[in-house]
Length: 203
Image (cartoon, rainbow, N blue to C red; front, side, top):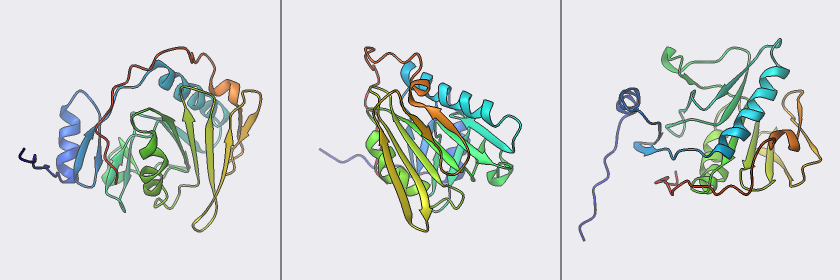
């Protein structure tokens, strides 16, 4: 069989297409990858965490963004939509686009079956090239399991995981604590995840 030729796009072409389609896609160094739809568990976890963050910092100089705000990673030429981002101070917009930022301090990803390997490996490598990025949480939507990474020095990261509901997670880069039970509030583990496999490629 003849191989299908891969079309590569410029960042500008991607942004133009993103404005005209009714679904979101990631841009990975020339390739446009449609994003799979999220489950109700995925949405509930992201909402739970972002709501707690937003309430905790409502009078402080931090901003919380959910998955409608795009992140640009220039060193890897990636446009992506993290589930939750925390920005210290004012957001830095890429090319004055108020839908695209470049300076998250904390990123939270809720793991989906089709993308969890990418989120843990090459996507994390891309995030680590962002100068302001200091902390990363990966939250499983099908069981109680959270991976927590925070930067301790140049090129050094500390890791801890959580698999019990009666403990709390304290962030390292900012004064904030949340219980695991609050993260998973109203999440139904008996629910079947109907997400289909997506065409996510490794960077």
